[in-house]
Image (cartoon, rainbow, N blue to C red; front, side):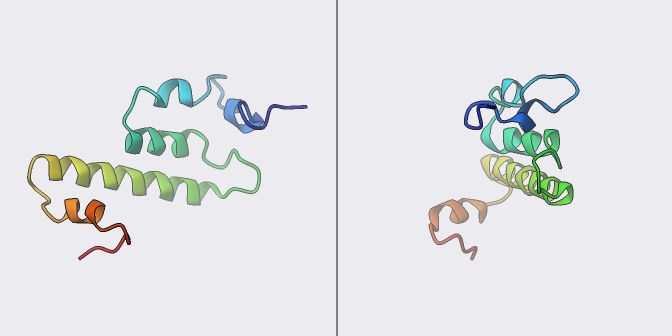
Length: 89
């Protein structure tokens, strides 16, 4: 029986045989998640690969905005984190 908690079968479906976490744990949260969704796009049973890729885009955009805010280019971005309701002013 496969270990569905620590090593689900779809985690090693990549042709390299490497688990995605071995790569993404060296990245920040948003970039790591973007890579994870690209790496495993469509591999999880019942999951739509287009949805996975859209999630990756969401994380990349969020990382871009985070980096812009860090250099002062997107002052409104910090409010997104401050507002726990998730709404954007």
